[in-house]
Amino acid sequence: MAKGDVYKVLKEDHENVKELFKQVIETGNTSKFPEIKKLLEAHMISEENFLYPPMEFVDEELVKKNKYEHELAWNKLLYLENEQGDKDWMENLKGLNNIILKHVQREENELFPKASEVLSEEAEEDMLKLIKEKKSESL
Ligand SMILES: [Fe+2]
Ligand SMILES: [Fe+2]
Image 1 (tube, rainbow, N blue to C red):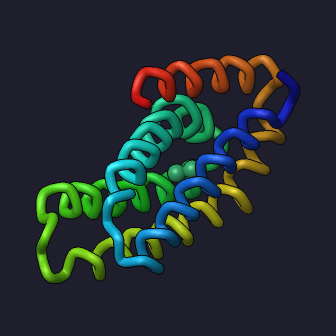
Image 2: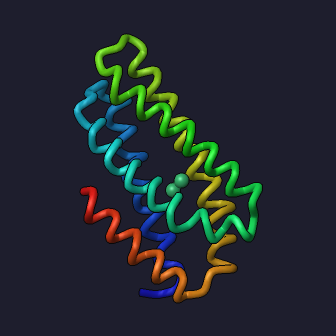
């Protein structure tokens, strides 16, 4: 493991979830939704537990924005899980996709660079270990 690896892993999740959204939206086939849900949940819980808390000391405002976007995403996920078959379901999935697209841009352009500046290699390694544990628990 090297400095910066943890952000690569988080960015891989971003790419994977963006691709899954694209497939569902382009094909109209909703069978990949459980995969989106599982991936997003594990990813967001990891960020909320391991990345956001140390960064709150560095840039409270930025973390607040990120947390707010997660909240929007959690609400949408709840609706999408509970209201499958609803006529507005696909519109809401697209809404979640838009929230996520904007959110991952903020993370990749603002939060991750800032984190990589202030967090030590050791802190990043610990974070990566916890993220991987969380992932193997939930997938
Ligand atoms: Fe996030
Ligand atoms: Fe993320």
